[in-house]
Image 1 (cartoon, one colour):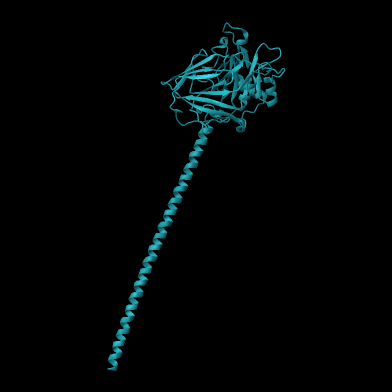
Image 2 (cartoon, helix red, strand yellow):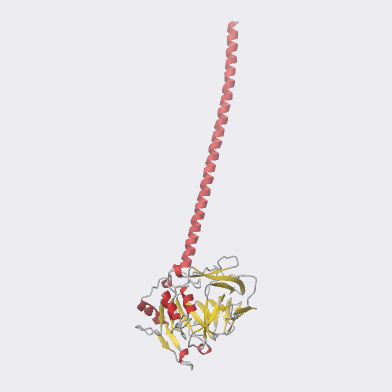
Length: 384
């Protein structure tokens, strides 16, 4: 009986041991399963984190590459038009020419050249209601054969050329007298790299007279542009562009309208005493056209800068010079048959164009005409 009891207790103990073993084994299996699930989850989390990190790195590299390509594209494009330019002209200074605009001077030599018309044409009043133009070319090795009729410098144009770090070419200049500060003093004061026909004594034939028209001699002065690079070299002028003194425009990647306001016909008055300019938009070539220079001139962009001006009479002169403040003002930008309001300003020696929200206004790629309008002396624009 005692043996039977012991046997029963042994069996019971064994059963209890087996039960505990089963529970312990089940717990181990459960813990192992949880461990494996946690390891799998950790691995998946690691792989997801690595995937996200790889995607972020790929996106960062793609963004850097896009920026690099955009910067390279911008670096290799004409900074005045956004169009392609010769590799030899990349990073070089522009050239600015003072060109007459009286009726006997028209059509000007070089304005409507099929290959090398000016990148930017600036028109404003000089004196007595007469307007004058300044032509900016980003590549002084790619110019029309002749440019002219050349005329004398005026302070506002000299200062405007400085906004683009340009080498300034002119035929004479206004001199100071009384309260009038002439272009000669502005050029000397600001150290403007310039070539003046009245002072040029170089080794090449840079300036001359073209007498093919029956006009007075003052309307015949021209620049033989093939000799300009050598003349610049003779002066030892810097040819690399200084980015700290150059107004870089932003350009769109494709032609864009700028508003829902149509602008098919523009009638521009520089001042109440000056001539009127008419520009008409063509849907066929997406350009503005004018015959008012007595040639077939087209532009992608029309910029209107309203500026405060004053007339200053120099002692001994029979007219009053028109002086522009060239500080800041409002304006308009017309392109693709539409128009928008803009604000312009000179900031840190650069020209900046913004919209009503103070955002930089990108221009459509192409050539530009700038009308420098006297806001307080009757200048205005009518848009139809």
